[in-house]
Length: 231
View (spheres, rainbow, N blue to C red):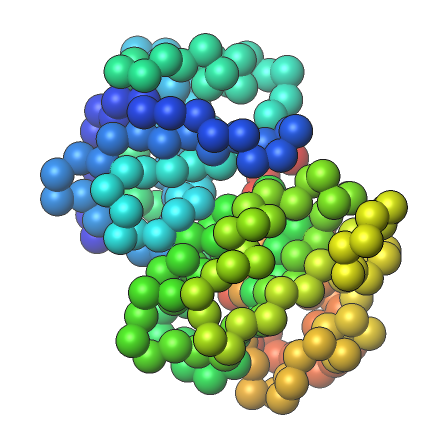
C-alpha cells in the first residue's frame, strides 16, 4: 500500500465516551489500508494543524473512521467544528502495527484511546475465515472511559475474551481494579509462550506493560507495539 495525500469529506461525528469522539469521512475510490494503521489528518484542507489518527474500524467499511480523545487543543476544536460535507486533507496509510501473518493466540492489550487500532484489528479479524483465539485486556480509568463498550461486548469472534481493568471501578462491571500487570496477564492468558501480544496506548503505558511481560519471560519477538504520542 502506497501512502498518498487525498481530500476527504466529513460525514458524521459519533460520541464514544464523555471524552472521546469518532469522526467518519468519505472513503476515496480504490483506497485501501491494513487494520492497525493510521493516517495524518489535517481537519482544515489548507490548515497547518495535523495529527496522526488510527483507523478505528475495519477496512471493509465504505467510510474511514478515526477516534480521538478530546482536549481543549486548537486541533480538537477544529475537529468539533466540522459539519457534514466539509473537506479535510489526509495522508496515508501509515504504520506497520497489525495482526498480519499471525496465527494461534493473539493477546491485545490496550490503554485508553489506544483501543482504536485494536478495534480496527478486531473488526477485521471478525471478517476473516480463519479466526484466531483473541484475548483483549483493556485498561481505563473508570467505566465511563470505555470506548466501544457495546461493540466489543458483542464482537462476532467465536473465541474472544474481553477483560476490563479499571483504575476505579464504582460499578457492577466485572473488572480488575488497578493497572494491567503480570498477575492479571498470567491469570487471563492461556499458553503465554505461544501467544503474540499487541500493545497499544500512551508510551508510558506501553513501556509499563512491556516490563510486566518481561516478568513473564515473554520475548520481544512476541510483542508488537503502537505508542500513542501526544497524550
